[in-house]
Structure formats: structure tokens, C-alpha cells
View (cartoon, rainbow, N blue to C red):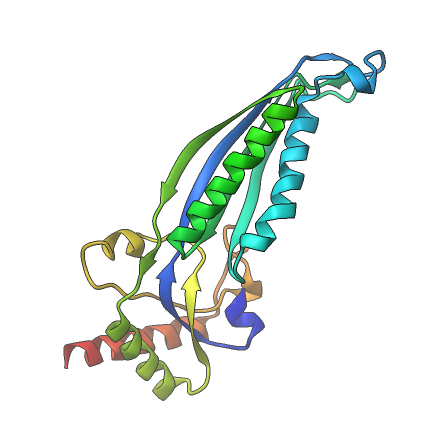
Length: 217
């Protein structure tokens, strides 16, 4: 959404984020919501909410402007308003282009879960569901894209990190790699309405072709 919001046509990717993904599960005791006093409950859902509250409290102090974290799924079992959840789980992910920052965020999450386990009354487990390392794009190839964009759409381009993972992240581990963005209408991605204007597609193709020519000269 950044390109459209800023009225830009070409994004020259400087780096691609790394990510960490986790499954967090809390185990308590399922019981009747009307007859189980608050002070004796072992509410697995409440345990996860406390963990996420701590994430929202602590992560901003660690984060940079483009650091992101997301709860993509929460499940309460059995999922009824009259039953205290005996089990709860969530999928959690964070991303940044700085590997050391990812390490610090991982350490903070470990600490949050350990503190919740120490306080109780529920048992919480944290398990990794996958990770990826950040990758930098080749500076000379970025220069070629930038020069091409400046000739074709002067002042309508910007260097920016990619907040999404791409095949280029893997390729960059073994070969010089570059990547560019064009705007999505409304800044929408990962949705069935995702679209890009024909004009921006054509401009992106022109910048791409000229950049390749510059690299080959």
C-alpha cells in the first residue's frame, strides 16, 4: 500500500524481510462459565490474551518503523460462550529485515511465555513453525532500476524493503538479485480483489527492460 499512498509508481527493493512463526498453546481446565468463580478458573483463552497483551506492550520498544507482528489465527476450545476454554492456541508471526532484531524479538517472546508459565494458572507452550532469514538486494542492480525509473517516471520511485517473502530471498543467497514493485489498486494484496492498473503494469515492464539493458551494457 505504500506506493499508492505516496503517489509512486516504482518500488526498488533494498532487502527482503526475514520472519519467525510460532504456535502458542495454552492448556487449562474446561468448566462451566456460570458456576466457575473467576478466582479459581484455569482459562486457557485468558492466558493467551495476557500473552498478546504483553507482546503489544513490549514489542513496540524493540521495533523499527517497518517491523510487523501478526496474530493470524486464534482458536478456543470448545468455543462456546457458556464454557471456560480448556485449551487455546494461536499462530503468531513477526518480520523485519534485521536478523539481530528478529533474535531480540524471539528472546522477548520466550521471556513473555516463561513469565506467564511462572504466574499460572495455565501451562503455555511455544513452538517454532518456521523461519526465514533476511536478504539484501544487489546494490548495483538497484542502481540500474533506479536510473531506469528516473528516466521513465522521474520522481515517482523509491527504494524500500519488501515486507513480504519472495523467491528472490532464496536466490539472493547464491546470486546477485534485484526486485521491483508496482502499485496494487487500493494497496490490497492477498485478497481476491487484488489488482494493478494496465498503465502501471506497462510502466513496470518498461523500467524492467531498460534496467536489464543497463545491467548488460
